[in-house]
Image (cartoon, rainbow, N blue to C red; front, side, top):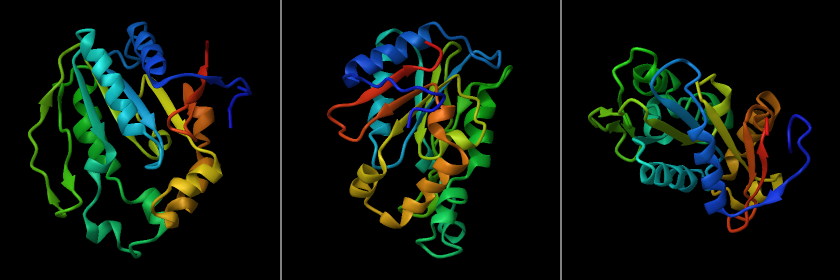
Length: 218
């Protein structure tokens, strides 16, 4: 579970965890030489990744930082592409549902060195299966992008800080509303090893009582 030999897991509250992440960001410079930090909150839908991303954003705003939160489910491909192999194909769910090219182009591209800083917050509405037509949002220099969703750590996205919210296989099976997706998460574990890639791993089997490994290089 702990990757890179990390065996210590410490109980923590979401408030303290948020504070630790924000303090870490205060000491972090963008690794690509741009004006913007990029944070990835990786976790399955059964984990509170969206809520944790919002906590981070709220705390950063209280510190005067410009923040934009982006969910990968706002960048799903059209239904005709997602469901090409059926609506319950775990391999398609793993590799084909999210338009990673659009994320690179519309979210990460504008935040590269010399970029415009204008980020598209979403692209596709899966409920209507139509483009959202949302306008680009300017992220001020010194601002922070927080992206959350599953399978984030297998695409070489340029995150300056990566947090993986982890569920044990039993907890994941109990709390996943679409059990046909479980093989996709098993494949992610085998092919990417998110606990090895992340800067910090948060165990979220009980969302009321998280525990974490601390930061990898602490």
